[in-house]
Amino acid sequence: MRSPNDLWEVIGSLAEDETTHVVTRLFAMYEERLTKDPGDEHALLFFRNLDTAVSQSTICNLNRR
Image (cartoon, rainbow, N blue to C red; front, side):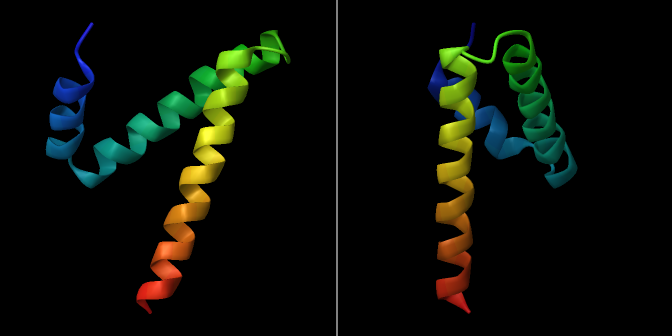
């Protein structure tokens, strides 16, 4: 398994369409886990963190306009 620093470097070098694919794949993986087990703490945490990240990005983008 790669370290968080290594993964950060890889993410930074991805093309925009590849980044979208990574996010889509992560979403699908955790959605599947949640479908199999609605109480899956890791999946619930992923979606909670994803919601926070989306909200923060949206607010940040609105403030730039």
